Image (cartoon, rainbow, N blue to C red; front, side, top):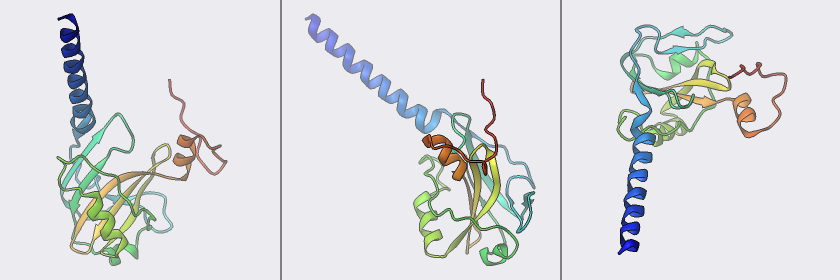
Length: 175
């Protein structure tokens, strides 16, 4: 009898822990980002160091304090990728990071396919928004836009243990 009770307790504990981990990964840490008109979607101009805002609407975004790469956003814009490419820095990013399923405006697979087949173009929004992390903006031919954070070369080196060279900014001290 004691063995059955102990087995039930173990199974129930495992289920509760699994459900809690799932909830925390998918829902728990994300917060909606309040729109800041004129500041939400910015791009790095060619030859410039200060990002500039572009025309956009219908802005939606989520973020989490638990990781610098959890930011995702969607918007619309009247601008076409070819127009934007003449004024702003292009990005090599082709694989956006997945968003939680409930944030349904951001489909990483669809965005990645659009980037690879030329229906969308990726741009640098802000460099080192946090140490080693750049903000990337993708704009499609039909006027939809997407934003996510991507590790840059310094971030990849810092987080995989490789020695960070002099070309990278100093990493901020943490407590």
